Image (tube, rainbow, N blue to C red):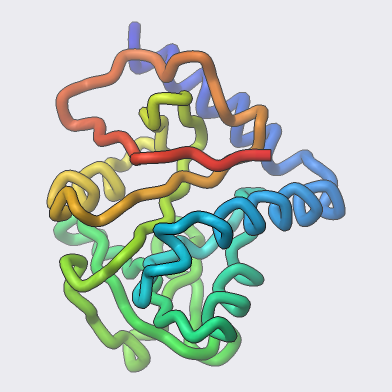
Length: 187
């Protein structure tokens, strides 16, 4: 029953993400970027793990470009379907280093992967289909981010990015393996 509720919410929000107008998505993403870049955790971070947006999510490619211009080292997720884990890879140039990976999500080409231990990351930017104001998240259902987040040292701040329609009063049925983010930024 709970899985059915989660699936229904997931489907509704994924459809809404895909149907939003690109101009509006970029405008809202820019507002979210401004909030993120003004956070003390962002300003002091030297190494930041950003997700690579797709399917109507909050746009992160421009955030990554700007973060690099600000002197930040940026890492992005590499999905390993065999062990269902995310590793982090440092990178420099989005255009030449990326290819479509598992689930249609961009990730570094195999020859461009430069692994960095998650414990060396100063800030992690996390996607989700939905968040609540306590930082609980409803992901896409595979558990990759939950597994990654629960293995992090608690000193590493985590920030979720979302559009206002993705922020719910309460994410349904938080389970023991679900792992919240420290803060959610939305517009």
